[in-house]
Amino acid sequence: MTTTSTVRHSLDDLLAQFINDLGATAAAGNIVIGDRLGLYRGLDEAGPLTSAELATYASLSERYVREWLRGQAAGGLVSYQPETDQFWLTGPQALALADPNGLQLAGAFQLALACFADLPAIEDTFRTGKGFAWGEHHPDVFTGCERFYRPGYVANLVSEWIPAITGLDDRLTAGSTVADLGCGLGSSTRILARTYPASRIVGFDNHPESIELARRMTHDAGLADRCTYQVAPAQDLPGDGYGLVTTFDCLHDMGDPLAAARRVRVALAPDGVWMIVEPFAGTSVADNLTPVGRIYYSLSSFLCVPHALSEGAADAWGNQAGEEPVADLVEQAGFGGFQRVAETPFNIVYEARP
Image (cartoon, rainbow, N blue to C red; front, top):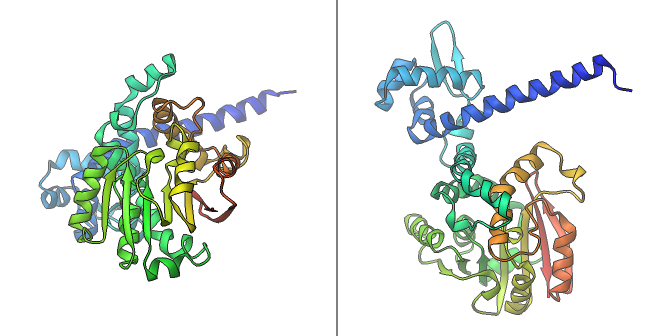
């Protein structure tokens, strides 16, 4: 029996969550503004600063900067000293928001806001059941997504994930041919190319604009001689004899992941390996009713499911599919070995062998 006190407690909890959620939603645009206008960077480089000092440093309007700073301090994203009316960033705050090689948390909000820009189109897909392709999204989706995923790849790909696959580090160090399938803007491609100069790394994606951005970013990073890019859908992966094929956070986005898996199986060398990196997910819906699952399900309804349906998926996986469909897919595609080899709070890594 539900008592009045229980209902009140539940409503109080819901209202508390609502306040936090609305605060985060309202702050999202300000986080992106702070990132784009160099406000976090200014605090990191020259803080502690008053609003007037930061406005002068960043060549911005003091009145807007003052309101921005107070909202950021209320959310705990910047630090505040009431005695001097100054603001600054702690080490963790700087790592999260100001360091270009840090966690890039502003990129996640950039991605979320870009999804909101496509709200009318996604609302229509709910009514019609039609798809909405990756390339149809606001351009900030592509750059925001790259910033969202890159820190995890930087932190884990070379140090944890590759060593978890027996013999792979030695193979790449000696020199191998690698296909980074669904490479997007090429973050993972560049990490591999930078770490394993003896290997030939090729990034493939079916979105021409992403491939063009990947080429530019690779040129700017001085890695154009180590990795190249081609426009190609997963099921039509060019070439064969690959020592390694990778799919980073993209298998669940495909309209026909089985066709892609079968093509990977054919394209691999007899002793090659397919590294499959997917968003972290449990075996049931209940397992995924977590803060991370909430982020992924919410992004999936705007990005992953619409794109898979745009490519003809009968029943799109979504990004919380979990291990079972991946294992079934690998088996159906004719692979002889499959296992989970690593995981983080945001990703699970699998290996499949012919």
